[in-house]
Amino acid sequence: MRRLIDIQKSIAEIQNVFPSNNLISCYADFLKHREYLHFYQFNETVFNSLIDLTLNLWDTTERINRASLVEVTKRYAKKGETKDTVTPQTATKIFELFKQIVYYKNLKLSNVTVDKIMASINSILIGVKLKEVELQWLCDHSTNSGFLLNRLLRYHLKSKAISEWAKKNFEKDFARSRRSEITSWIIDENPDFKIDKETIEYDFEYQIIEDKRIVNAYKNEVDAYRAIEKELRPILTSVDNSFIDDDGFKHRLNFQEKPVLKRPRRHYPGYIKMNSGYGIDIPDFDKINEDFNDKFDYYYNRIMAWSFAYSRLPINIKTSLLHKYYTDELFPTFFTIGKKLKSVEYFNWLKQLAC
Image (spheres, rainbow, N blue to C red):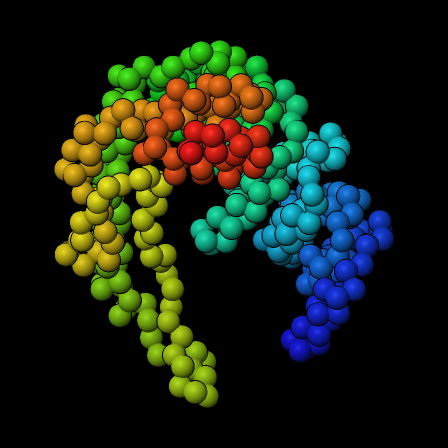
């Protein structure tokens, strides 16, 4: 069976057909085409049908593969060149599905599977134009999930509601690790805005405290995991011939998920090896403090540069504002900003500074 599927996938990839509008009308159609759908050309009607099907079946009591529905839809969505053509009706359905998955979290699946589903619906929503009432909902629930906060901070169009939210929450702790992004929404309305240097210092101190807390919490979770494994596995695990195959493979009962260190993505100048058997490296916090104090202007200019980059201002205004923060040491940052903006005008401007 697997060989036939692989052959059919190769045929679909070569043919690259434009699918008919009625390709997906029910779950049976989805099962029939899900292995090959990403080899078809993008058809907006088929994409809309996938969204309709997923939303309509989400609360069903029937046995369906929700993870597959969302993953296949995400993969097919990437076939489209832009999401500017997504209709307001479909955009609302995508947003409702996003809320069901990320906010209400009514999924009785493993944490790994749920995380994958959340990442997939998050990807589908990126670039979709939302209504003001939907943006306001994101503002009101921004601290409930990292995905909600991401979609709010990274929204691609100007929004009065988000700019007002950014002003009200600028000094909140959750904003301290997202300083450039939240600042960008204030810059949208006030291009001359500058972050107070004291705020950057508070941000740094908060992030150090938070990272230490995360590392200590992870170590406690690992200790508890190991204690349970040591005490309960001999009791809960018994030899059962039904779990032994012809090759002698013995099934290992999985009654708890192993802890995973979810550390924020940050730039650290140094790490120290942990010699206590936890299998991770942790930041060298003493070195980080020293580096931050010695290179404060560098970090401040980099944060301001990204604030302008994340803003929704026109490129010519961005470059005029970025100019005062450019240094040779920050060229890698400015180059990375150009890759994100995908603007020839920006790179021509950067070329003049770099020469």
